[in-house]
Image (cartoon, rainbow, N blue to C red):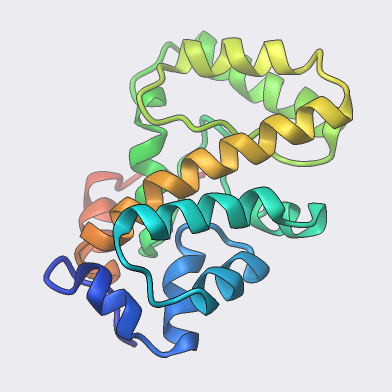
Length: 191
């Protein structure tokens, strides 16, 4: 199964078969509708065009397709397991929870439960660059949203995560290699 490699970048992505391109895109956003739509738009002239298409595809997803993507995300504060590239990326994105105070992690766990009970899906935030405290503050603030407002926030958070992951896709080492390195670093840190 070919993966996009740094040497291939956008040209390599554009050259993949449709099923291979869709598989690569699922690491960026785990909605099959998203992957089909973005793969069908190839070839892209540059990374900016691919990123814009990916963000627009996320924003246009039916809510059931958003939920499919949400199902692939671990709870904030829990470590994604496994060798898959998206698990490695998730661990990097949530690195702000590594070494966080136990009270903050416990509050995140409790907040995740309240959020899931209120909205029926995992709390999603583009965690890159955020501390555990910042993730918790955003979670607590979003608990006051109504369902319509929260769905809009979720779409924008998913779009932000997808934007970052598309850039990683075009610059990422082989998924197995990245996963093995991530697993070695995260040994003993399960979900």
